[in-house]
Image (cartoon, rainbow, N blue to C red):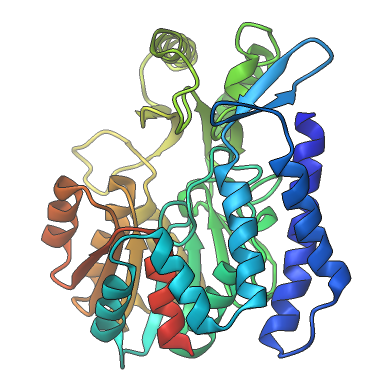
Length: 394
């Protein structure tokens, strides 16, 4: 069943946390822990398939088809990583990704010798491979090891900043890195856990919070109906963030018919319009996969209307709250979509001593990032980026 699938993935999370700690402390890893990974892989690979889709039971009468390539492939890579040398693992990654070695070496050399004050990065698609569902996108062992090495050796502040929720099935719940290594920032930086695990939040006006709570209640009721339940189960699902709500309308495998996806978008837009007819409280961003409904904040320009909270605002909040001293640099900013560009712009507004690495093959995005940051580099996959960071951290 779908519920059993999620429980199985979270068992691997607990095992992965222990394995990462043992691995980084040069301690032996028990067969019992390793068997949790092999057992999960065996279960996933034996789920019935139709073409490339795995068929799970949604309830007693309905099935759901899922692309489980992330969950299966990351387990396979983790087992290879644990059983082989570093050189063999890099060779394995080079078989999976075109131009892997060349891009890793180029990125390593360009960043070598820089002791970054701040390393701020998006997660999914940047330092973590994309998954069809956020709930089961558990961080892999090799990924956590590579990022921890870099954070431990080459940075003062290391921050994972994502638009996803912080917890309650959010960023903190799917991460397996060692404690006290990373600052986790969710909801585009509106909320974060510091290295000691204390929560901090960007202030929200009471009126706006009441409206967001009302919206969340209506969306919860909507996806409980048979007609719209599917939208809570694909991709990002329904995520209640701090100052923002996300509802999926499509996933990376386009499992929803385009007509149904577009109709659902129009339905959500009408719902938001009823709650905010003057368009003062909410901004809607449609990524084509997710519908992001974001509480506005006052613009710095008094002549402009309220704006939606972006990741640049998140970085500025973190800089003030954590005393990151972005102005001192050097800073390394990493992303993979246009929504990550405001992070680069926020850092560049503080100091030209900013480097950026974006995971993209999109020429339009490359031009946008390069215009914002002269020290911009581009790689094709998250595995290239984290391998280069691992080289720098070893």
